[in-house]
Image (cartoon, rainbow, N blue to C red; front, side, top):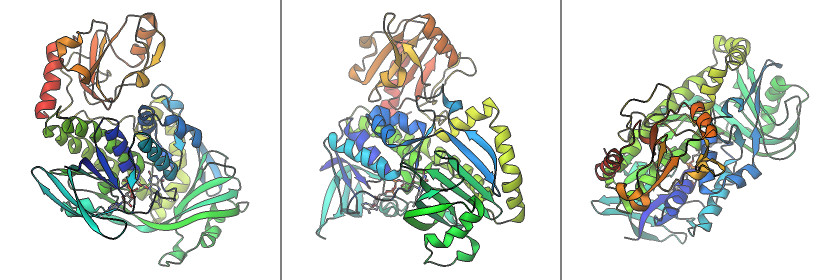
Length: 521
Ligand SMILES: Cc1cc2nc3c(=O)[nH]c(=O)nc-3n(C[C@H](O)[C@H](O)[C@H](O)COP(=O)(O)OP(=O)(O)OC[C@H]3O[C@@H](n4cnc5c(N)ncnc54)[C@H](O)[C@@H]3O)c2cc1C
């Protein structure tokens, strides 16, 4: 075997997967058919859940130093500002990162590529996957090398992180049903001044569509996304100058452009792969699902696919688990992708529809509804959890177990265990739980009761045990997260609850881990 895992594609998804596997001691070959990292910004919004994962990977400080924190969104309709939606207030207790970080995909890829090199692995550029053959013992991949010759590589597993036109998907014969939207979009990175609120997202609704202006790093730098005006549709030589009149019409005559560093037009598809796995091959990121950019979810969803698969694949490669554990990858991630497709599809149709009624809705009603709804704390929190991806949970997964006894509102099997600040020792400091809980291990948290000794459980270094001491500060923090005492939570390495309950019995924890790892159910 040449490598444990062949990662095809060094976009954000492939880089995240490679990092997560390498830091878990798995040997990885990463190939990409491009000559080097992408230069285009493409995705811009990094969600809170991604930042939490970046923190575990040790790259969050680099991302925060380079990015810009999105603090609010301003909604405009027909030239008038109709509402300002604060971003992040509602997430203050949810996550250490209660905002969207505006950081281009190119920067995200650069930071993840640097980290991968620090861990001792580099991307093999100019190397294209052209063939795949699977058998019971592994996968034989045919790679076209930079000099044009071909070589075969034998891998135990293959991860198709190779984007919307995935070769892995095609070679596995997995269908990619869906359709393109009829509209053509444009994206432009510009230096501009005008009436937009600086450093915040500005959304201009108009009868025929919308324009989004995202603040980017540096003075007066903006990313503009919009629908190509009707009179330009059908042309394939559109330049940025051609869309300026419609932009000025909506965002104000005072809008002035100093430079445009990137302009592109594109059609958006919404599609989801029929399966995310074919025996030893997996699909992740855009190879598995593509949808409209509404809500800045695309890149973030691919990164979470990678985080979900990595710990499972690492346990299987290290012979700590049977391959049945890997079935839970698509059982958990297909529902997330399908839900995302449905939500973004509905939102997207509303903002792009050409119909007269939709135009009225966008310019007269939508901003008012949004402003009203988002003034309600409960709605703000739900929206924050959805957009930030901190609310993603796998309650119906075969890996999730909540035997009962916990009150309604308490975290349950499948939920992302909440972010807490706790004293892990009576005389110790208050610590951030996300920094404390090591994501390369299972973590068992005993609350209001003693924890069993590690020897009684017998999982050696795979499991870390934490007994949270009784303490007035801890009591308040646990109550805030609706965690009652006594209770216990067994967390999977990705921070989701595997097993939870009231009374902690060593036997139940032992059974849970050995059943899941040995038979995957
Ligand atoms: C113009 C534009 C604007 C966008 N804006 C946003 C946004 O605002 N927010 C958002 O969330 N998303 C946005 N997206 C989507 C976002 O860019 C994708 O969701 C993201 O790139 C997916 O990452 P990925 O790693 O899964 O795939 P990709 O980034 O597509 O990476 C796939 C990689 O695989 C390589 N590859 C392909 N085939 C092979 C092969 N056979 N052998 C070897 N290598 C191969 C490719 O060279 C590429 O590097 C935008 C996309 C575009 C095009």
